[in-house]
Length: 403
Ligand code: ADP
Ligand code: ASP
Ligand code: MG
Image 1 (spheres, protein in one colour):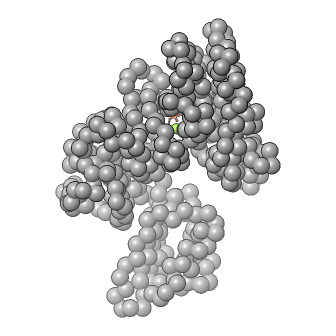
Image 2 (image 1 turned 60 degrees about the vertical axis):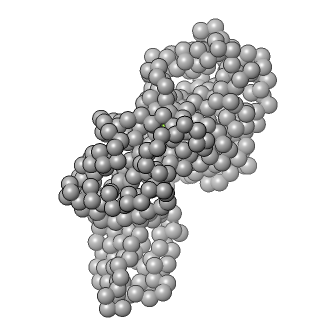
């Protein structure tokens, strides 16, 4: 008998009616005579609300208590789903992470699932039951609750599919698949039938929040195919896979964009070995993630300008760290809070020359100024002013025939 893992996101369980609808989806699998397990997120808004409460209690809220607090939303939604399934006449029960357990390693708020003990689940499935399991949370070696990063239920589902050896892992969300770009931002976005793990990983990391990046990495490492589907409409979704069977010959698969980026330029820093390391060391020690970096060629061989991007939430802290840094001297610091990264992604780039030129030319014709550029084998990212993001996506979507 086939085993299927279904994951429901926050919007899909966002109200009592939606939870009832999710239970109908779960029941439809059960009726097909498969073993079905469900992972649920918290009802939409609940986790954000808990995060805000922690901030009101303390601006230095204890890390372990934070995870204990923000993981409670999943407990409620799982109990509601299991309760509804029982009401419908099915055998079902909820499982919190510590009851299995779902073991994690690494820091609070950013732990990774290392193992899921599936013995009890297998017994329950064998007896015809439907286990409903909390996403997002786990338990560490000190038996404390942990969370695995925002939107982490995607990764919980993939790791459960791995440990329970499921044939299918389906991510049910509020859109009917992965689109060429966010369908809520751009109406001409098209649904992608199949996408490679690497492309999905880049899209997710570069701002397409439909899948959490860690979860795609876990799926790739464990060779788990993922289907992304809508819990609201019955339509075929998107397959995320490593297999190259029946792929279209599209060069660019999708376009992603980020929000809340900030750009910092340090003008007139001494141009000598070790200076970049001196700038970035305190940032890394304070867990500030530096994304794009460019250093201008030094005209006089003595001084240069260094530009880099970070998340705008980190801007104040970064400014303070640079100003306090006794190891560097410079002429001026400048900041820009309203910048966003727009990226084109596609494995077709590896074999097709001229993509960079086409991207830059298309943006230039629409007078979109490029502030910073970064590339990898399968993506090109440009930093633009946030007010130009929509214009940039529109022109690139057309240029690469995604409309
Ligand atoms: P869930 O609560 O089910 O986990 P999320 O809000 O995390 O759902 O992800 C779904 C959202 O992702 C959609 O509502 C959509 O606006 C957004 N999104 C961003 N980029 C894309 C994309 N390329 N394809 C589909 N959805 C996208
Ligand atoms: N409830 C958690 C969050 O909002 C996890 C998830 O939705 O996947 O981040
Ligand atoms: Mg999500």
